Length: 162
Image (tube, rainbow, N blue to C red; front, side):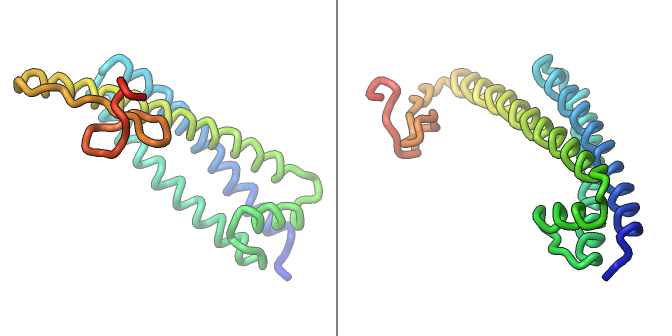
């Protein structure tokens, strides 16, 4: 069996760095949302580049964490990581760090969904404007079976019939 203290030390380093990246990503996503809302395209482009670089580094850390957990004899999935943490850290420091990281990851996911919704609304607005400028009739919004609006051409009910 691998050395518990070595495993703990390595996971501590990796999770700490991942947490720092998650906090930085959260700040970037917040700034991206502000730039999208303010329609500051240059700022959005810079933030997207910075976000991509950060995500690549984040992925590298995740791979290293998976390798560390696998080297300790545990599966590289979430359950394996949690088992490995329980095995190598009786004081619970890694568990607290992992929990804090998950809080920030969930916040990043929420911010990313929000930003995606802003982009989608903007895209639809631009599409409607282009349609009108071209002298075309605007497409009738339809409801999908799930209740969301869709572009025409996708089976659904018109808003008037819903």
